[in-house]
Amino acid sequence: MSIQIGEHLPAGTFKTATADGLKDMTTSELFDGKTVVLFAVPGAFTPTCDAKHLPGYIEQIEAFRAKGVATVACMAVNDVFVMKAWGKASGADGKVLMLADGNGDYTRALGLELDATGFGMGKRSQRFALVVKDGVATQVNVESGGEFKVSAAEYVLAQL
Image (cartoon, rainbow, N blue to C red):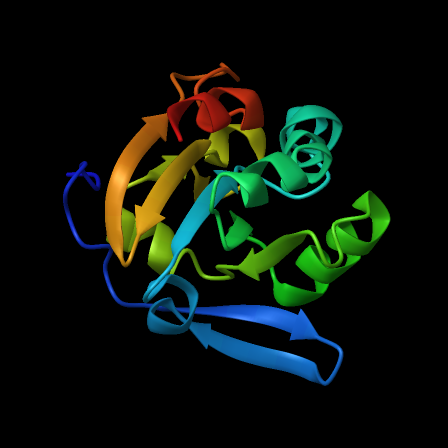
């Protein structure tokens, strides 16, 4: 079963790249005491993710901040080096926090995994966006297969 509105997000750890090198980031560090938008994509540099999903959040970062969002984070079942490169190539640095869920552990904990083995991509994350206030999901937007609507930056902004 996937995460539902009103539920605490499960505990977990992500990998992220910082100016000081690679770092583990816990869900407590990410979510405690603040409002966070966590969105996930099936894969870095993939067509919709690269052309629409991540760029929408980068372009709207000031609007999110104006609505009290402390952090906008992008998660993918990719390694930290890929997420770092994608963030740099996309201009996400200082705007969107890039989180690697390399083995898909957090994606599975959320109940939002996607079997993309038929496309040669292995197990990935569904496309989704969560609004999280102090560790509790207040909005859960999971896309239907192949769609890009409810996890888009503009859609999530309208929910805040």
